[in-house]
Length: 342
Length: 289
Image (cartoon, each protein chain N blue to C red):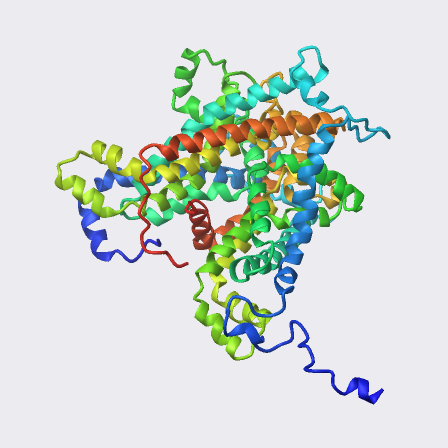
């Protein structure tokens, strides 16, 4: 017994014990036991697995079944849910494509404004003048508010009879211009087209313009000032400097802003939900509203999951096209200036 | 990045700058565009119902009427805005703590350790960045249902806590820390946990603060998810409550605006106090590529 215990050669270090591990000096990147990294990753992995990875796969699985929350049996239907979305005689066809069309209108109407106006503002605020920092903060301010606040606020501001916008238009006589363009009296900002779309786009621009502006500003500060000086020496006009220095320097940032803005606009939900309730008619009922109503309102989750995946495939294609279009041409890499510590 | 620092350039720029009258006019118009609607929200919340719906509208309340707040700021009652405020505060605070805890540990492992499967894990996290949020809504609703978390604060705290953004964001900063700091600590006998808590975290406080503010704001403002996972009026968060208020009060705009004021004052205060972190965080999110 004693003979058996005596020669138990060097006791193995308990893994993870405090103190520098033997291999520490040779390979500084690998200290501690082999499982230490997994322990550090475990809390994130548990939540990520449960609420990101698992639902991503489960969503696909649901989309392949006639998955009704209220029904005990959820038969496998293969690609049937997807086929229904392309079958004009199916129940879901009309409302899904109406929703897709509404989302499409919103994307097409809002993205150009959200690309250009913040760029102009960023260029103005990139110059030095008194009040610049204040203005940057003020323009960004609405972005920190939630869509719920923005939605109920502008539901009130744009109210045809009680809203302050129509009052201001009346006082400044600008409403005559709108009447000449065919708007009713009072201007039906939320209850007739195209005014409802104009309102939804305008409010979204007011709300999120600061976000894009801040990203543009950071990008503008990465364009080397030497290039502007050189262009000036060469006699380039302001327009030429914008065309040949600013735009090429901003290309990667433009690609990022374009991609993010398209995705954000394609996810539009709260503005319509709170300001127009999808109306007039169903004209501002977006794809996301249709998906959520189908899945969580009527509990037809298989159909809704198929709609969601079809929309995300579409968005994926659009993102890739955007990115390739803006990234590839010229292939100039923006020179990185000194790393900014924060 | 911050405004001060270019003293010499500022004077020359100001001299050649926009004509100061025009500049000021533009500054005022822009500021009014962004602050005006928020001011209108605040002013309306202080008016009586009769005044708020009168035509033409008044700018300043003829007399300050706090009845909208009195109605809303009770803990019970039909529309307990004060309770929604506390629910939002609790959910967003817990969510922020959870995000910091799980994102920082995971980012440290991914930034500083070599281990089997690191590339794969990183790849999986990256790939989910390309899936839009709405794809997760329904499967997560079922998971929350199975866990018994429907109509509870946990539904608001946990599911969004493992976003890829937090890990990417912190990893950038952790990678940028000089390895020598960590080696010195290791030579002094610190294990990985010691290096993490005594070297990495204290040296990346601004990044952690930025992530904390962004996580808090995102959770506080979240709209779709709370609307679908919460039911009881006393369990709602402010955004979900505002939807309920709007449906109930219709044209009682002072009451609805009072609710909106309660929902926006905390984030506006947070923004004023932590502006630098928020703007820096947003700016960096676009500079990854």
